[in-house]
Image (cartoon, rainbow, N blue to C red; front, side):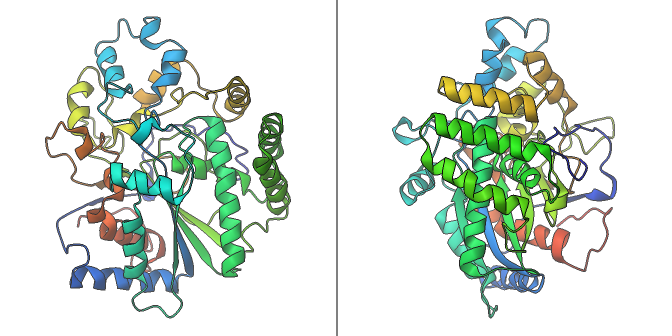
Length: 433
């Protein structure tokens, strides 16, 4: 998408990404915390520090209890209830694999539902239930911070942020505002400024939160920013959410003066993020999209997923083609807001950020099988999580692999190689580890 994207939806281009694209494979190597592993992480930490990275933020939500495929919205606008799937062989079975209660993904402990609080108790509960499956655990972040800072005079700060996991436009917009507020506080407390960088690693729909944040950070006075903030402020005032009202008032002038990060640069790595909102690169530094992907196509278009029915129902349960959440949680899908006021605000935002609606439009977007947005570098990564197991907890339909402990060194190696290393000044080759 262009600079001054102004909250346009991604164009869902099926064209080859060209020099933006590279590939990699996760292979068995040094085990986490082994001497060789720690040494490799320390080297990467030194490279990050040399590039000016002063903080790494791990942003994620919950796969559990959050309607991760967004089938609530599909049912709301039709789906099986109106028979829209009739005549499309295999679609009923795909929807069953996606639907909460049928897809094998458990509810959150104590039947807790989004919005989730970004507090220690919620994070501990999520760590106990999900472990490192699509979840940056406290253990993961603690080990990461210790490993990369072994030989750095000024240690890189590592933070974990749990966003609300409200998988709809209103929830993601509020999530973007809260993230920017947290980043502003981080810059203030750490005295970050020009020439320094913050790297956000975002899993799943947390990447969509960052896509919205990228539009808010546009240095030009785009019309969409004041409109979106106005919708959030009005919603918050009508529902007595004084903290959210104050946040809007605090953040809006910082965005208009381009001083929210005190001059620091924000870099982004999005992992397994569905292609929906357009990214605005003008207010960001470096952008990398990583997708768990295994080619199943026979037409040579290896950069696209395969959405063929009914074959997909045989592939999904073992994550044969990679990340099916990234492939299917596209425009038209979503969880539903729980109140009438939230539904009204969500509808206003939907009209602003996503022109696609309806069951047939969702199917159209899913069948485009696009793995990457139009902006940023792209990495197709085979995480080797297809083991033939039909136990959803082993892979969560290919969406769990990015945050596993055994992938920490692999992820860091690719981030450094793709974004910060002079060793790879250009793209176009295949990197097979």
